[in-house]
Length: 362
Image (cartoon, rainbow, N blue to C red; front, side, top):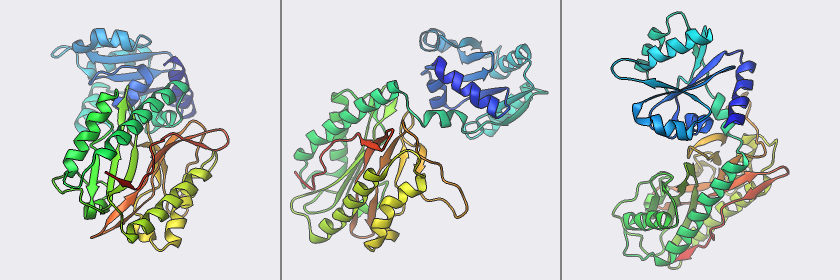
């Protein structure tokens, strides 16, 4: 954790920012190790403080030993009181805040308490650090991905046409938990037939049926880190249209996986798959970006997507872990999406997900 705080302090110096108030839960955990549901960090050049209440005194001491604890008491010592005391002690006149994570009411309370201290935008600083994973993070992600692979491999042969989407989703969740997941990374998607045309469909009572496209999007969360995997299958022989669209999506994904490398613009990574799908006549049916980073959040940077004309795209760096998930979605018929996670290496990319890309199951 100390090395992460050191890197944040370097970014603060770049921004000429004396301190940052960290309120986003994932950022708080990343920097301090603290997993409690309430609290904020204050990081300056000389101090690293954790503000939380009495429920977490023992937990914070165990999980965030590098951070000085400042206890909040209600009533008696609010966050504003504690921050004002810390700002005075450290001589802070400007503090960055994660505005996208603070409610307007909370911001105003802090602003009122820190009378005479300027609050400025400190967006994206910790998120920028989190994009490149260290060895410990990659090891946890590998465990989450392996559990996900094992779970879907075990469940797919058990699917039957008379099962509902909801039943299949529950089977997948149980399989992940039995193999060590603390929870699913997100509500599992099982979408059959026309429902598969909805990229973020919710499983319901519709049956899986025979010969229909079935999109399964799932992931295991392990030690706070998320996996993400999508497979599209049918129960029984697929129709010719399914085989055609599946082949296009698979080829697009393989081209993207083969082309990922450090220094590649994220918009160019998106084009590796998008150009193939467009050339096949389905460009309008691929409505989302190629992928996104994963880690303590299921969706984090980098975003592998198109950018507006004249806007600069971020680039890939070694140590990033991103999804690669092209798809084609056709209203009234269904859809196909294939997703794996990939680690950007020094000279290319390593595909981390290993679940088979079989078409027929059940």
